[in-house]
Length: 133
Image 1 (cartoon, helix red, strand yellow):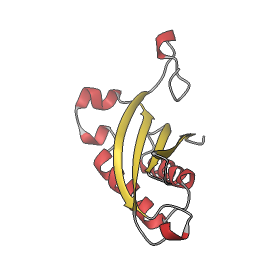
Image 2 (cartoon, helix red, strand yellow; image 1 turned 180 degrees about the vertical axis):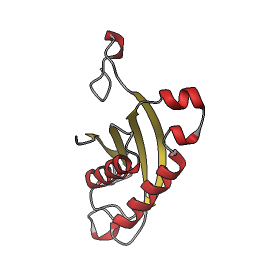
Image 3 (tube, helix red, strand yellow; image 1 turned 180 degrees about the horizontal axis):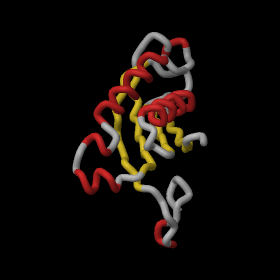
């Protein structure tokens, strides 16, 4: 089973996945007073669950998600949000992705904050959100 609950090896019908890995964002993130006035580094991975057969045939941008534009939209939203928690940041990323293109059926988001506290290499959160019917 993959992160969306699909078992491709069992022959289940599962949509394709477009993965955007390592989106870099420098933004205010954190709850401690010293974190509220400085930018920190977030790394964001986004997996879009969608049918990619049209672009597979056409090789045209309009038949898929413009991931360059989606990346900018994610970066902009996180910079504007000044989140306190990475969980909230992940939810915002999921909302941006699902609102970006109606062809996206579900999204998996991983947000990593490096050196969150002394002695901790990184903290990360992973969420999966589906389009509401």
